[in-house]
Image (cartoon, rainbow, N blue to C red; front, top):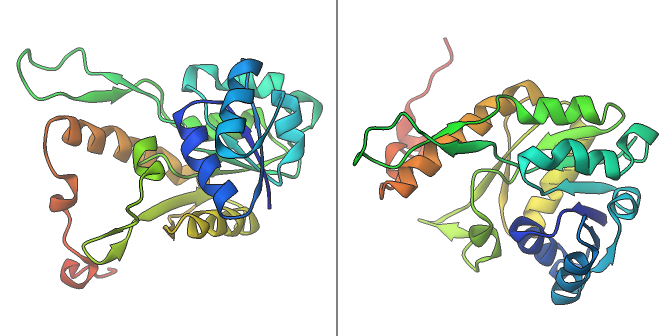
Length: 223
């Protein structure tokens, strides 16, 4: 598959490098052309402009700070239809330190913006947006571990287009991960909120996994 990446940071390196190793064609574009070229050379991908990366990928990963999404998508040609018909993966998180947290208390964060993925979708109305890969830091995706306590690490996916979700699920499997369909794009806001909450737990030194029993012990029933 052809994958275009908008951004040249840690997430671009971790996911893009993994997809290159899995046999996908990857083109990395960024506002800093030198950084894009350096990263691409390091992971075995190609480098180009943001617009070239957007036009290259069947799937396009948006891997930039949330505050930069509008500018990056504009530079990628979103308004000109460059991303029309493509699957856009939003892996961004929009959170900042909780300024209201008690001094000396646990580290915590709050969302700086609600429903980022839905805003991204409005910026690229001709594309199919899928929220994915936002729950873990880039170091997790770059690391060798894919199995914890006998289960593959799961990647929740939120999107409205079944074909787009299926495409991203395939990319997750190629990284040794377990794709977990989690509903339409309107549910992505809950995935984003989960991220800010769980990251706060981790920064506070708590094991977030310990808060959830395995499925076999959940006893969940639909009313």
